[in-house]
Image (tube, rainbow, N blue to C red):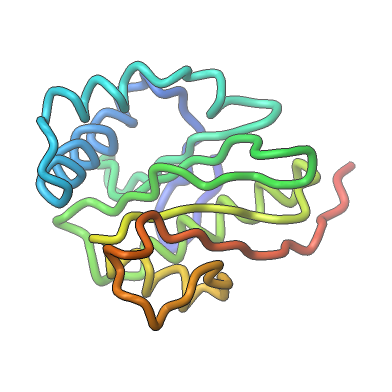
Length: 167
């Protein structure tokens, strides 16, 4: 665990109680925005192979403040040099505090330590806040932002990382 801004950065497994609010709120968010059944979203998020978000190829981080999970995210191996970000989340009660950017910084640093040179991710067409977050964090849109969001479908992004030396 590391500490930044009085926030603990905890590496957890998908079934860890600290990850439960992340998965629950994401399920509600996806269900609401994309008009899909909530139970389907919960099932998809909780039954995804947990090992994809565990070492050595992946990680799942939760930011904890005063014992409460406030934000989190994960990455998994996309290819030999690329990590794919997934499940970027900030609690509804803690938005507009820069926590999403902090999650990205933590995930990027960990991916670089693991030897990844690039980050790839997609976000949905009904998530303009996520698009704004990734653009503000220096990600390159791999789509034409001039096209209507629903025409594009999933919005892909990438960012090149500076490799960090380990050891």
